[in-house]
Image 1 (cartoon, helix red, strand yellow):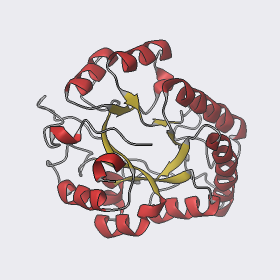
Image 2 (image 1 turned 90 degrees about the horizontal axis):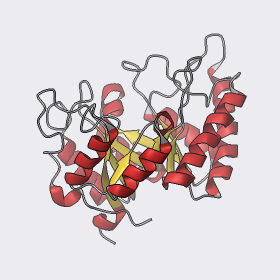
Image 3 (image 1 turned 30 degrees about the vertical axis):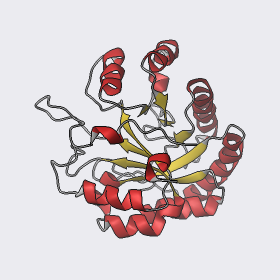
Length: 268
């Protein structure tokens, strides 16, 4: 099986191609040659309209996030007093995946709570992910945990790859994996290629954006073409989500990725 069967490049429609009406966003993504998108928070859209647009432009949905609340702006997974809200948002995400065909959910972990030991929040996150992972497995859905850099996301519960991998290992389910965002990891860790190689067996989703500032690949400090050569040569099988802000001058945000790579469809 070649990398064309194992890896699908897709566009994050939350960012790309820009802040446009959803019809125009998805139309432009499809016209650019993509077959697949990720949408961070479809909970905020009219699902009837979104389902119709995905079908109209022959786009598959790869990934969504669990929704947050005003009281928990970065999610619920590790928050001691958010048991009810966690399950409400998890069941909501699972239902959207069933309806729209997505098979990956990024489960937002929440922030460190002052006065609560880290180990206590970790135990809560492990327990909830075990239960949610078992529930998601019935629908063939993978749950993901992502490390967010603490420059853009101060206080987030998971900020390094080692923390995300430790959580995945503690849960111990095959459909609970790490979401590896090269932008966040550049800000926090560097050493991107060796860290990816060490963790690839635990990674269930990849996102790319350049640093600083989550900009388009080629405009910053990360050698993303070299990184993607390593990804394609590895055992990774899954999506590579293009998650970055479009160029401020209005130029083509996809120009760096060869068009022949945009039309891949993941064999899953």
